[in-house]
Length: 420
Image (tube, rainbow, N blue to C red; front, side):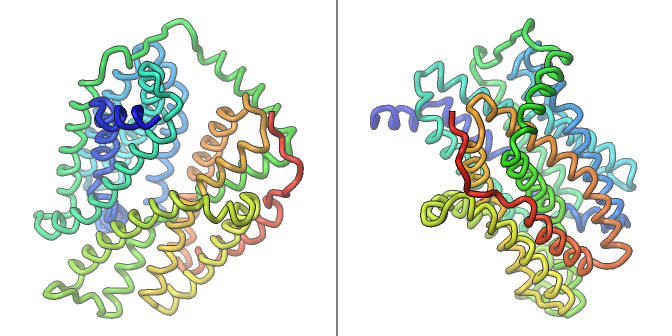
């Protein structure tokens, strides 16, 4: 066992897998995307529509991209996805109006659809090839740690970039550099990971299989609750997670508390955002890594249910803190939301795997992902409209109340589990 771990640690291809995630997460624009778009004159409703376009494209092309991977190869598909990403960054850089940025979102959605699941499948294939499949959990943990390290370093590095570049839009061009490195890295992957399989899948066969699986799963009340709870929880968080950017900007500039050393106003906001995202990612990785200690003390079902309620209460407190312009409390509530998001995902996998048959597990995860994407397509513009028409305070108040009510129907009962 120990020999295998040493072999894995020194294996060149495993290192490539690790650096793939590291480079992929060097998105220097992430802490500033919303304030960049709003700086172009877009309102939150228009930003929501843009996010809806991205999620819609990802959802629509996720299945076709998988079929294309079978026909032309996983390696080629992954190379194509980074071309789409790079094109999207160019459009974001050029973005002077809604239409140009919308095209960028379309290409970013293509990149997400073509990347989704492909690299994980290549890792599994490589582990099978090397006889290391038993250690897949160890390898995933190792590669994920590099991805989170990339996210954290990206946020900290973005501070230096936005303070020294001519304009905020230049961070999109800088973000192309690590994606070119990832393109070169993937091109160096061994050819056997391409795994072309021209004859197996078709659109009609996929939809027939999905329909049959959906009917089977819909008969299990517990699974329906688990899936809807995960999809709505993740969908809400991913829709509102970057609202901290305009919130922080408004509070800091309005209250005149943005001074950091010799920096004032908007520069201080950018520093705050880079530091916040960097710290959030560091602690989120630890939350995801250590949540098993909480589920061991209580039950996974209890933790799963309580975290949904905690998100509702956190949003109510967040609404209050924004209304009162309490900067530290606002950051603190977003910190709690980030921690719970990354911590709840492993709990979802833990709970769901105990309430379904073995052959249903992949299908359930796929259906949950699709429902989450559809919810985000609907929620992003709706949340933006509510925030524009009323306020972010009202938006978070409404969402918090809805989540607390919804969990009365979505709570998972600790009954006999279905393990087959």
